[in-house]
Amino acid sequence: MTDTAAAPDTRAADRYENRLLVILFLSFGFVFFDRQALAFLAPYMDQDFGLSNAELGTLSGVLALTWALAGMFAGRLSDVLGRRKPILVVAVVLFSLFSASSGLMGGFAGLLVARALMGTAEGAVLPMAQSLMVEASRERRRGFNMGLLQGSSAGLLGGIVAPLVVVWIAETYDWRVAFYVTIVPGLIMAALIAKFVRERSPRAAAGAPAETAAPVKEPRVPLGEVLKLRNIVVCMLIACAYLTWFVTIITFTPTYLTEVKGFGPGTMSGVMTCLGVAWVLWGFATPAISDRLGRKPALIGFTALAVFCPLAVVYVESPVLLGAIMIVTYTGLGCFTLFMATIPAETVPRGALATALGVIMGVGELAGGFLGPMVAGWASDQWGLQAAMYIAAGGALVVVALAFALKETAPAVLRRAAA
Image (tube, rainbow, N blue to C red; front, side, top):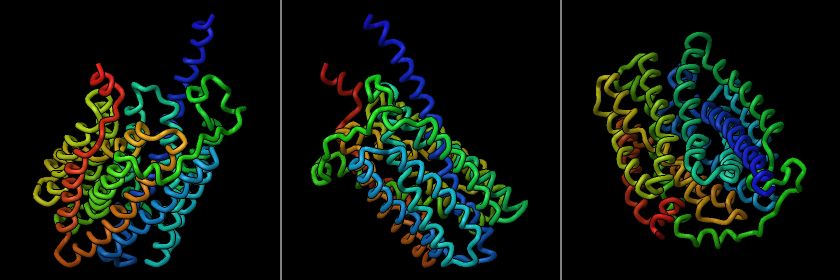
């Protein structure tokens, strides 16, 4: 009787896991579609605003600043209230509205405000989505699921679809129209989350109907106790350096390709799409490999490859060869899932999960996402855009060194070590 009764519950949990993955995959993908749009539209906006490299870096940085603060606040609020779904729904609705508002702005100051508001809404999405997904995931699929949610989704919609769609809209209509259309998919995803996502997954609730269960408050874990864990501190430092690598590349590469290398809009869009292909590929492959080989060796090895991506932008002249090298070396986004989600989730108790994820993301966005592009923009105005690429490569080198201090958390690896 026990086995017969347990089988349907297991199948239901597996079905919910897959459904949740699809919904959160698309939701976070559209977050990055909106975030990436500015970089791809910058050459068109320059005709109206005359943006300097420092101003472009500031626009990217202010979004990262508010994203960081919102992520830390939302993560802690979620753990205190024991609720994630309502925060996620509100965040998705608001970032869609604020993203579209960028097209209404008539100057740099207005655009700065719009990007700040957009970051405030978007910052809450990732900690909520990661927390919901990790609880619904089977152990053997934990890294794979988190990689698809955070890495491949952003790569597909932010790295492949965004440059093709927003550049086409800007060429065909106007760059403002490209911002306006971003409101539609976000509102659709908010409705799907409200209808289909449960506050507590069948797997986490041990078969209890999540839609009828009261919110579950886990024992509160003080933030100070979370920050005493070595893996959490190391992941925070890694986030600072890796966000510098990522945001600097994605902010300045389109401008570098058009202004320094002289690529046309179509060629630039094609090369940037190669980054998206790599983002999708490594976004799920890296965490899946880490499920078997270990989080630490995967992070070290794939980050060592990531060092060469920004250097290729500077030294490779052929757009075809550059695109091919980018596919091979743009491995960092697969690593993001490891230090931002999987390793912390395997380190802290459930009652501190959203807090840990929010703090790691928030500190990383503050240092790497906010300060990183601003420094890179200033350096580019002083010494040329290649300075930004060197700063990005340096960020990846720092991550390689920091990763050696991590404690392994992959369950399969720990079991083999114990045996």
